[in-house]
Image 1 (cartoon, rainbow over the protein chains, first blue to last red):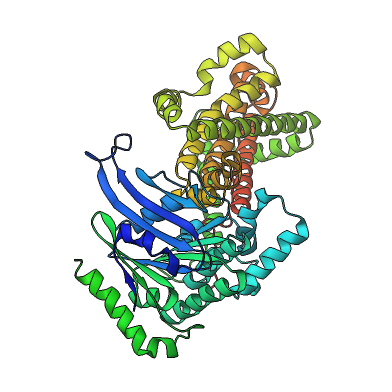
Image 2 (cartoon, rainbow over the protein chains, first blue to last red):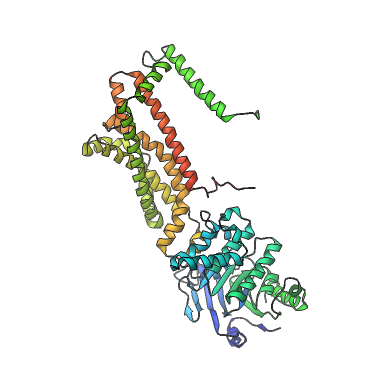
Length: 278
Length: 257
């Protein structure tokens, strides 16, 4: 079991990552309140985060609830600026929503438009790409097929169950064909069976589309099951406690992978970090 | 409450009771000679139906009300979206809009008559002014109520501000705009009639004025009944339109269980 200590050492650990990092987070900090003068006065949400995500990797971020994970994702998605430090894709600092990135929000019911059918919700972010009609249709069909919702394309989101709505949100991200997919507690409010299905869908997406995936979750088992590496955050304000490399065989399987002694070991390691932040 | 309650029967009963009350009041000469009997009004209603002048007045009233409503809808939505999109503008205009809202458009009727004369133009301009403010204010509120998550979703997918305005903000504001239009539709009709009655604009308002001036009470009441029915139709029309446009909204959803 290889582990990496906090921030400064992560950079020396890069040889473990097969390719240079696609997504690089360097000394990122975020405080609210006094956005102009950083530091004193404002509420510090993120202290100092440094980690990277390699091309084709699945990285999970875990940490106690309210640690500022959603704030971090908003910074990565270019929806809000960092107070100091930066996040970069292929070395380019993120200053606005990066075109190669898609973000699946935690609150799927609010991120789907109730006045649009499932299909039109999936097409919504593609419209400004000015694709040919056939291409648009193909992408939408493929994405809905991938999440198993082809039959529901003409229904409205509010006619679907929570798990199905979440799959629509994921299909929308897939149809966008991002190179980097970021998901914010994507499976938090679905039942256990749907959750397993969605986790495997996530891993399949990585295989089929070669995406780089970053998932924020508060579920440690889920993090270990999904990830190549787990970034463990401590609060408050948020900082990286450790980056845990997950050595589990691929492809992963809900039953056999979770039954491995290594799985238990790794989840214990992560859990111990969260329970007793040292 | 009894379970065999029939809404339609109760409605018909209510109308019948109102007619009976009217007939009784007229028979007892409660309002002197100025309240004609149900029968004489019904006869005049029949006479109106055979008069081409009545139909053209009716068409003018409906036309003016709808034109004014459409103009204020279009203008109100555009202004509302602009005001609602910029927080400082929203705050800057709030007090002025709230102040102007309760002032009935009829107070500027003399001024508008002075400029435009007793014309159809004058009438629809008053309708436009009268319906504009509520629609602007509701649109502003609708824009403001747009879910930040929906907005962030659109932004994260690289949608530009104008596209977000058209595809996210405008549909989000639609329920508010729908309410404003539903409230404004009967108001448009009322303003058209008042503009005819007091300002000499064409349409049923003028017919009403002529009947009143000539002391032709049965015709006067027949016209009032026509206006009442017209009001019901306007209400019904906007309700149907709203239901169609906003079928996705919580208040109209038909969720199969």
